Image (cartoon, rainbow, N blue to C red; front, side, top):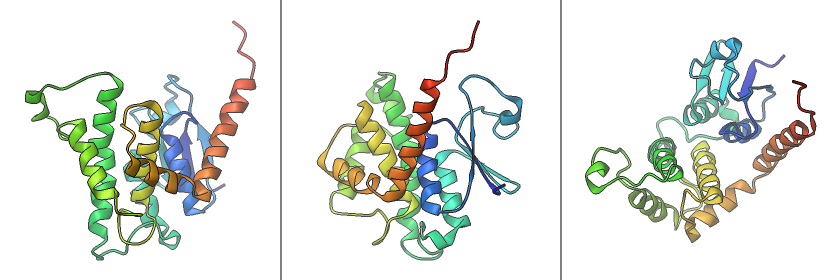
Amino acid sequence: MSDLVFYTHPMSRGRIIRWMLEEVGQPYETVLVEWGRNDPAFLAVNPMGKVPAVKHGDAVVTECGAVCAYLADAFPQAGLAPAHGSKERAPYYRWLFFAAGPIEQAAGLAAMAVQPSAEQEAMLGFGSMARVLNAMEGYLKDREFVAGDRFSAADLYLASHLAWGMQFGTIEKRPAFEAYAARHTARPAAIRAAEIDDGIIAQQQKQPEPAE
């Protein structure tokens, strides 16, 4: 049994972590978590009852941005984070947390069709969707990677948010976003991860409904 255990659902943010695990390249065990079951075994891992979560030995990590950062540092041989102490660590952290904070919050409100007023924007960490999109576009339009000259966990996390948001209409399609997301989601590990989760979905859809 692997000392890496991945708790997920194939139609969740767990797809981001599946991609990260495929980039890391270490063996891992997948535990599928069903929606709304409140399984005590999983609640012992994450009392929030939400996926994804990762156990690495005795360590438990939840929240996608944290899991990406943890795995990049736990397996440095994968080259998914700038070296500690390097100047590239600053934009790496910046955009990891930008995706986890402003993008996640802005896209969540957009999905619920909530439009904050000008007064409410002052109380929100992301301000407005326009600020979020303009900040990203200004940074990404002339860059292949967010930190230095190589792919990192920050690119994986940011590209995942952009691809997902543009697909479901919570993030406006802009050329800089489309090019950036397409470039990174075409990586072999991203394709493998998507095939794994899509295969699980297909298998689940074939299973008969339980008898009442």
